[in-house]
Picture 1 (cartoon, rainbow, N blue to C red):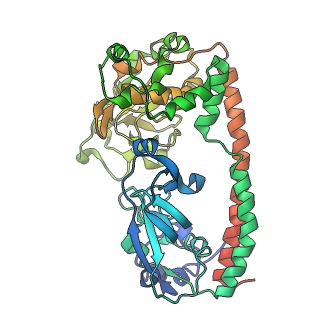
Picture 2: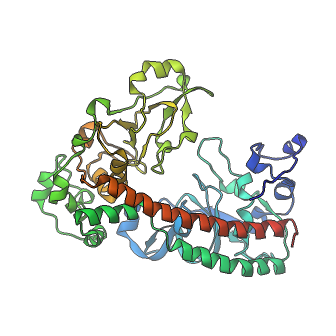
Length: 450
């Protein structure tokens, strides 16, 4: 791919509502994006979805798509039995890493609260192909996404201020026709991709002779018989139905009773972090504080670390994260149970919501981390986490007794999972190349190039 070279005048930046000076925003001719064209709010009514959690989806399965902030699977969070919207709409992600991503929707659907909704106003005569518009907006919205809070956002009031270039309807229609076969190819490629957890689950299930198909059926059972004797077996004596679902029955199987984390972790080097006060947070430092947002994708992300004062680090130096420690989100619904192997050279300590896990000398850390991404570990966390509402917790005293599947073929299992994930990365790369073709078509339409 060739290097793009351009010149941007600093005087030009002063004309923008959002002063963005990082390279990805200085692409030349940006005034075409920000000052010309028609304003979205003049022609579209906007709104938001509603708060819907995973538990609601599981209890109300149906045929209507529920869209969320994610961009995988066309943004589908699940399928439910009711719908809030019916017709042609645009939706966009309002919060998170995918903020500003726009989609075309047509039919009956529902959105979560982190989705914005835009519908063409009644009686408006606007020559626009709604299928074309998301492609156009996805080249523009990045200029309007706010990152001031550390969590990217594109709120409704800002979305309404976006101006889009006026491109002849005939040209829009032509581009949509050109894009359709590319999108079809992308769809076929996406069908080859499996979620990382699915790949991991299949490898572990095959290796340990676990019936994954029957297990998946149990996960979706909404009505089941509950033996009160089994409730009494729980250490916490939790009687709520959600803690006694049949999907947790796997924990009673012999392969899950055989080994626990106590066999692989170094308890003297496993601990929760420390709470920090704002006066120890500084703008620049060689020492950092790890929060849950560094672990949310099961890969350690050092770009979102918090710089801290050296005195706070030295005071808590005994909590310093070491290479090949696993960091586990130990508190907070939505992230609890997520983890990452620490592979950074930076000096870090963790927050009180993140557990630093050290391991015995001969432990295969990558194998353990794959297991911690599996449905088996995630459901163990779901069943035994303590607390209520959004403030649920896992403690070291619990983790050491959590079951773990151990095998003499640990490295072989690691190599197999890595190989399958590597093949998926090739497909993902091909999808990105196809997406670039679409972006080029849209860019050419904006700059009136053939």
